[in-house]
Length: 343
Image 1 (tube, rainbow, N blue to C red):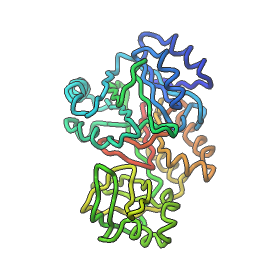
Image 2: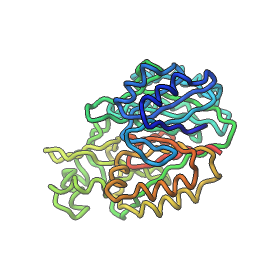
Image 3: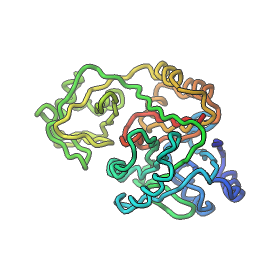
């Protein structure tokens, strides 16, 4: 797999027109750029809209990046809505790679439909250890995200890779438990809204635990998200908005009658050093998916330059994008970084 990056649309268009017939291509770019490039894309190219791009030169905004791969190693499946309509095709593609421990599924999802959990639940037929990595496409404020297969718009796309080289999937959280927990006592799971914690209005109780006035709660969302515990794993659920009825909506589902952990921020660069140091091998390629909320935090704190130095020192053949949520195995996460490594 080879990372590519283009500073202009003309460069990207030229690359699309010259794409070798033996290669597949995934490109990440702004919504406007994706719409423009789709008219020039062959059917073996997938385009996904972003809030920012990660390139072999580090974090950028407003460029086009992505990666090429041997098309013989991959099978592309358009995932319809509802996802159950594509179950047969997904099962067939999965069966071809299920015995390869290096295989993985790259899952690119509509980032504004709020259906990631439904899509992931449709993968019930995959083995627990089968690697699923992905991100949710982002918009430019108009409420529409864009994914294309060639010149044809799709809602969600899955690409199964039958890799000969070793692969690894890593999730990084830069938030840690504070020791405080909240019991979700009333929630609309599909609406991703919590109405009460500990039997009290959600915003009121969330603010009380943080020790801040309720009217200032939203200002602390970026630094104090919530975590859902799955066995030994912690999946972040980011709060989105406080509503007039005291409910709080989230960027992922929060279930009634479950406990969530109140999180605090750790040192992002120290966590990154630990993440990269724990890699099982030295990769030749890295796909890097970062949540838009991490991007906001890194921008506010001026962390991207130091992040780039560490990441590109780890592997310069790196690409990725800023997403509206991350897919990790069969879980949908927020405020997270997903790394897909290829040896």
